[in-house]
Length: 102
Image (cartoon, helix red, strand yellow):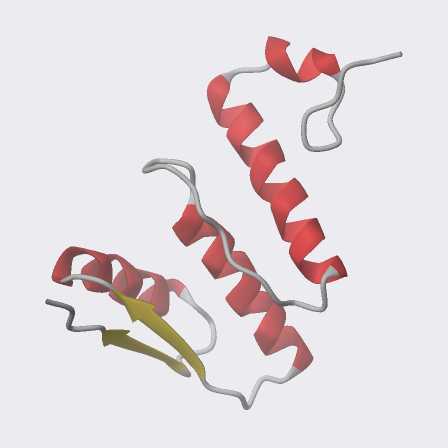
C-alpha cells in the first residue's frame, strides 16, 4: 500500500518544493470545486493562498462573467497584493475590501 498525502503518491516527496506546492494547490482547488465551489483555506505564509484565490476567481468568471467577486483582506499589504491580482485578471469585476479589526 502506498503512502498518500492529499491524494498524491509518496513520489511527491522527490519533487522540488515549488512543484509540490503547485500539486498541493491543484489538489485543494479540485477539492474546492467538488465541494460546490465553497470552502476556505487555512495555510502558512508562502503556501500560495493568493494563487488559489486567483484560480477560484477565474473559475467564478468562467461560470458567470458578469458577477462581482469580493475579496476581503486584513491589511494594506494584502490589499496591494490583490490590487495586482485584479490588474492581471481578464475580468476587472473584483472588489477588494479591507476589514478593519481592532
